[in-house]
Image 1: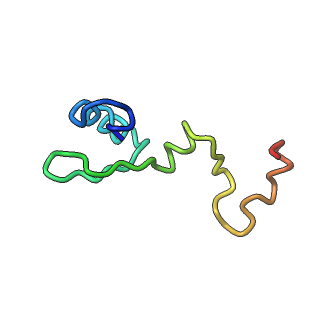
Image 2: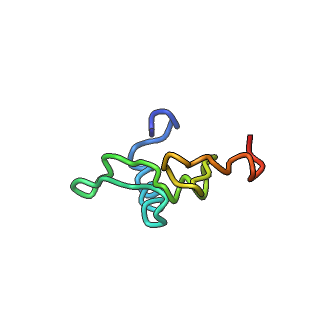
Amino acid sequence: MASLLGVKKKDIQPVLKTLGDANLANLYIEKEKIKLAKISWQGLNEIGDINLKYGMGKDAYKNYSAEGYR
């Protein structure tokens, strides 16, 4: 991620830690360094383009059209 953004790995660590503290990302930390960061379900709901209102069951999109989505 750091190389894609063009920043140093040590500079992105505090940002990822902040996202983890806000429950917007799940972090795997080893020896005080973040080894893996993955967006959480809460993060998807708050900042993503995904609406998880109906859950992930077989009827997840049953009311999708009724809510005004296409």
